[in-house]
Amino acid sequence: MNPFSSFLRQWLADDDFDAFVAYWDRLERLTVQVYREKVPVAAAQPEFAEVWPWLRERYGRWQSTLEPFWRQTTAAGASTQTDPFLLLLQKQSSADIPGDWWAMQHLPAAREALNRYVLAQE
Image (cartoon, rainbow, N blue to C red; front, side, top):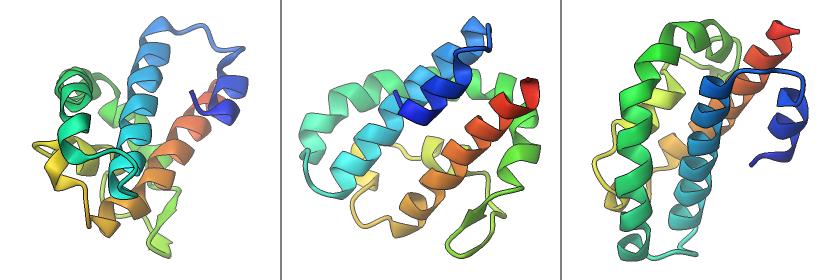
């Protein structure tokens, strides 16, 4: 789990959000590893097959809640205009990750949105 997010969430008692963030952490880690070619696409596919469907199924519960927070972020040097969560969740396989610099530029916006949400709950 992202250390800063973990630190922030220690005071937030929301099991649903914790589960969402734990799966998002896995997606984020996998995306970075595949993009940087530290994990081959084929080796990433089993985790992809577990993580992406779980997040896709549950993101609807968080989409409107997280939107104001990702809209306060930047991606690719400008205000974030694209839902960074959906951008990653729309991928169909781990083979869609290599070379997708646009998606990589939106990972920090998603992380920042999660952290902003937690801070707003205090």
